[in-house]
Length: 338
Ligand code: PEP
Ligand code: MN
Image 1 (tube, protein in one colour):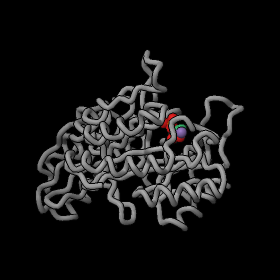
Image 2: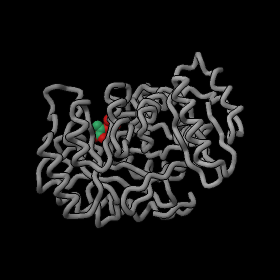
Image 3: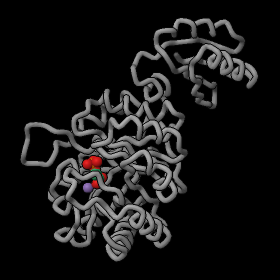
């Protein structure tokens, strides 16, 4: 249920509403607006009729149900788009956010070289996996904490913010010490224990869509994080499984406008995993921006042929830099800055 407060209702009335929501066994989630505040009362759907009684409290304008199953992620709860502030970046704001870097952190030289190159090309955030969720247990699993330290070093050198994946709930605290944004990979999109633990931290989470999750299921996964009180979730479409075999996945750009309609959360697109081939990355990056994405995640490697993972889909720095230039007219046509 959404409890809409009257414009200008004093803080005591809001606090009384919050107290009553707690008393009824629901969790209050507050959005403070410039005009009015609203409170989402989230909990067991079966007893929600009892919340209707809050309508008689002073300062309450209306109590309306949220019809979508993903309550806090929905536009019903929060009509205005969420903008996540990260230092000088506004993720989901006017300016597009570009995340770039290698699939895996491999060595100091590799990471630093790549970080300097993507920074020079105009990226705002450096990616690089230190914990890698690999399909095979025999494949490179990442440098783990050593990789996190290298990311911190690259951040120090370039001023780029860091996004890196956390695979296991037990590592959330460790990864959170180094990362500015914690990534949940496609394979973990329904790892509810991981999602819940990410709901308890105060850093943004980049949640990738699973390769076989519907948009509704995907938003329910985001809801796991939001429901624990972390409202800074960035969505990222990264391709789904279809019958097509010419590409690694099928980048579902439908998801961009559909998500835009259903949720207030920022929406990114990863054309690297979405296609699986470097030649297809640039056209799909442009298409993603044309579709209205708030940002892109692109894999870049100095020597893709030597990459420990995902070399085939990685751009060399020069190509990435050219792509950044080529994206400008697309950003402008979409009413965004780059
Ligand atoms: C990655 O970003 O390198 C990655 C493993 O992506 P995904 O989870 O989308 O496969
Ligand atoms: Mn990868």
